[in-house]
Image (cartoon, rainbow, N blue to C red):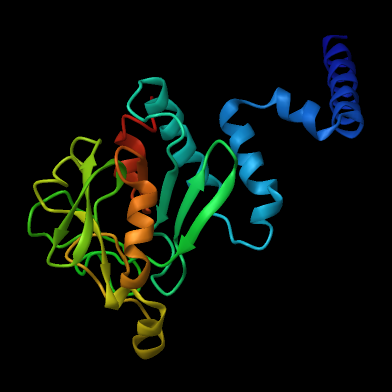
Length: 236
């Protein structure tokens, strides 16, 4: 008898769920979503993003989760974009996105280099240690700009202890580089590599830096189980 009652409840519940999804408008469904899911749907369905490849949904979800947490803690000023770098993609692919979270639009999608000791075509190893010449994973706040040996550059402050909190001491910054240009790929099959910095094409470095400078959020993702298990931001 008990099994029969449970079966009836499941059948009725399934019918209700199907009718809700079929008969509900997109705006009604969005109201039922969490804020994180709402932003993902906004980015995924925005008309201005139709012809632009989007980050993998899981990576975008991680980035938005961190953004919302840090915004709630008042660490990110209102209106600042989210930058996502996905190092599970090869350097021959565009793997950097700058996203207007409020509007859901992709402001930039382009190439970015990883550290020379993180890997060749793929970034597979990551470090928070000085002179490792590896990239570091996790969430960063962008800092101030300066003129350095690579020209106009942007300092970064890592927010995750043990994963990227040594970024400023290591001089991990966003800067322009000729080896980060798409033309370099046609010669070598991959981008050139940095000493750990997320380097971008020199010609657009100033434009990108000005877009994300002064306390916007940067999220660098890589396939690393230790980071996924121990990131205090992702596991909050």
